[in-house]
Length: 185
Image 1 (cartoon, rainbow, N blue to C red):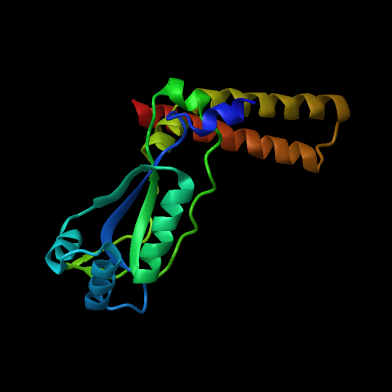
Image 2 (image 1 turned 60 degrees about the vertical axis):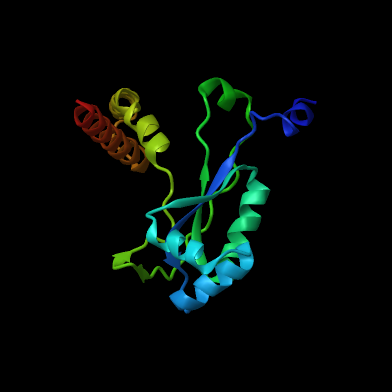
């Protein structure tokens, strides 16, 4: 029932279709510009402006299916674009459904305007802040794994494969947690 009420709700996840001037492999810039002019039914000078700007949002706040339709149409025209989730408030995220699957990475970035254009730039700003807060948790988990290994060796004697695996994983988590905590400061 809650999914039905969320379908028309503006709190659902929204996406922007962003163009950064990159074209896909096997296409020439002039042909892609002509294709985009025909696709958007636009003046060629406006299309030239798309290639001069570092990034242009071609479509704002559309649902995932609509964003993918634009992505596919732009791909057919030879243009590379990025579908980026619109960041919402935390209250809105709690009410929103799970995120759609990530877009597959594509090959064939080209030089446009003397600069190499990235094929797909995932929005890592939100992910980075979440991962950086996990440092203390990783330290605690690492210490617990190492302690479990020590207890197993004391109780069962000779260390086995599981003991080595838990110890290695514990040390890895401990070091990763320390790095994240120290990187934050």
